[in-house]
Structure formats: C-alpha cells, structure tokens
Image (cartoon, rainbow, N blue to C red):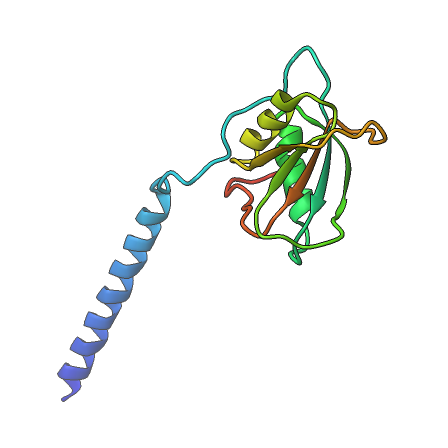
Length: 142
C-alpha cells in the first residue's frame, strides 16, 4: 500500500513537470498573426487635423483610436464623446477633401466615409467611433 502511494505521487509529479515544460516552451512560440490596423500613414506634405469622438458607452475608445491615428502621422487635435451612440464607425470629411477622410478610415481598419463640409470646424476630419470598432491587439504606446 505504501509503494502504491509513492508511485501515485511520482506519477503526479511527472504530470506536473511535463505540464510545466509544455507551458514554458509553448509560451516561447510566436502567437498566431492577429488582425492588425493597416499600415496607412498621413500624407507627408500636408497636415490632416482630426477630431475623434466616442459614440459608444465604452470608456477609452477615443483615446485608443487617437494612439492609432497619431502613430500613423495624423494630427489628432480633439478627442471627446459624441452626443449620441451608434453601432458603426463613420468618418466625416469636414474640409472638402474626401481623400483625407478615406485615408483616416483605412488607418482605423475601415469605416464608412461621408462628406459633410463645415467651415466652422477647425478640423479636416471627424471620426465617430461606433460599437463595432476594435482597437488593434498590439500595444498602443511605443
């Protein structure tokens, strides 16, 4: 009976050691490629001023999008909360340059682009982040 108990403890120790070894070596493997934000950058010869508004109840979404856009070279001059919530993300062209808005939409991973020029805005593009927008899985800060 005593020999059986020792054998059970030895088997349990081998299982734990094997599990630990597997966990350590699996942790060293590279994770599978995840969905990334497309490598889109702002035009080098012009400043694109962007306003990012969170149109959801999720806290911090506008800040996450700001990191993404600034890393891509866009000048995010204002972040805040939209007056109402929405499901999908919309990028609004405010300055009559739809190509700028389209570039911002691509940098965010895709979004619907609409032209709504308004000369009273200080920005070229307004981003209304909807519930379906997801921040990239990689770290947002350098």
